[in-house]
Image 1 (cartoon, rainbow, N blue to C red):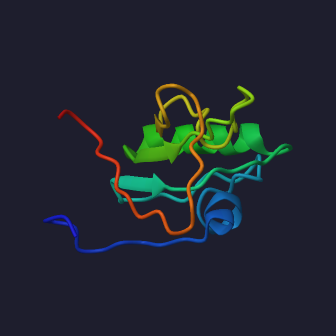
Image 2: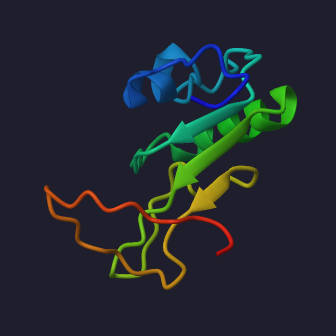
Image 3: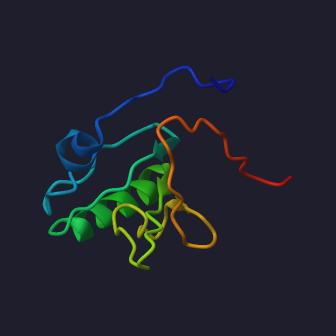
Length: 117
């Protein structure tokens, strides 16, 4: 755990997106207010009919509550992107710089260094 972090909130991804926090499928409900400072989304999501609502709600939450969101990019080999949440204007999107996807084996436990060497 990082120094100063005393609480970690854990959500089911679908619950966080839909009704448990972001209210992303509702055009009339705003996201819940948060005093949390950072969120990690280690998943790739697809919501065809609600993508715009989810993105609007995430960008609203980031701007309104100064809530940093780090999200994954799908990096499919066919060139298309998964719009949720990597298409957010204000999130930090993380993926491979060459746009490719790496196959990972179930027993592969290597760590990837992020940042300057």
